[in-house]
View 1 (cartoon, one colour):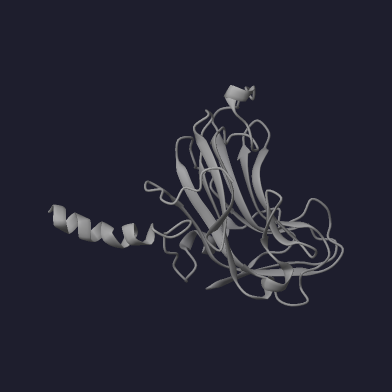
View 2 (cartoon, rainbow, N blue to C red):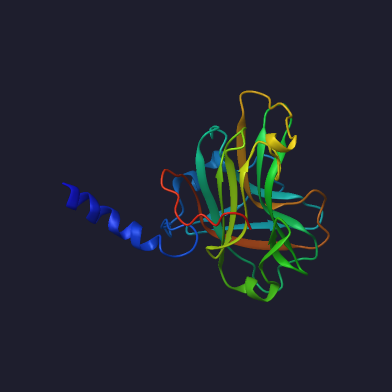
Length: 233
């Protein structure tokens, strides 16, 4: 029995020798992506879901085209979530737009992390360069791994093409980084605590030029095994 269990775990152990998340992602869209309830009701344009690709588009004057999930996530859980993204030549636009947002809901909202897109820097996360503009014509993966905690026991890690670019540990992930009780970040959190993850094209103001992005392998999963922790970056 012990040998059988070891053989089952061996592929994961071997993959854990690399960088970043090791979990495989199916090429087909997951059912939650195709569920009509996943469409953000505030979208100006409905995302085009055509397995295995989801296309998001904004025309001048639009602000949002997005999917959403995660309302049932709970404190104490650890999640991996991400997507593969591609921007076709000539469809990047000139505005700064969020490709995804993770925020706490209830008693108002508090954005925990976002992935940004603009023509000058390409894709950035937490102010760090992730994917350069010339590389956006090819598909690239952006992922985050987070332990949801209202104590100094959470962590948040960002991976671009499965390489870590930003990470903080021993933090409260009910507020934007970096928040620690031990450093005076003691604000109360409304209960029940809920989270939501949005992905697509999300702008605070109306865009001035058209922009189109394509996403594949949109995924999230609760984690019990968490290899390749990058520490603090």
